[in-house]
Image: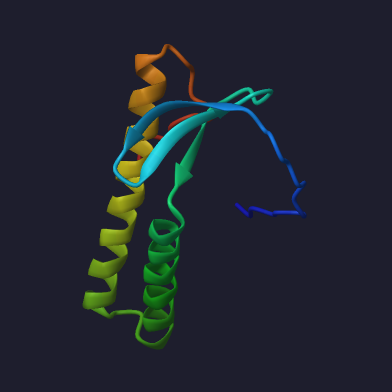
Length: 105
């Protein structure tokens, strides 16, 4: 899956609701959007991206690098926790998920 961000529009007074806050993340609902989203603090998001990029570089050099695989598992666990938080907030509010769970997570 590829995510493409084609430009952004400048908005001075976009409205939204904060549905829940947990640590450095929040589940938010922008007005006009069908489903809530996840707001992640910039430093937290940057840290996660750096973890994944570092692991990718290490695994390209040494595909069997157990330490890199452990670090990858750690990053996936962090993302899983974010997703579980998102899903629990939606479930508490009776909002369906905007995707189908494949059961492998």
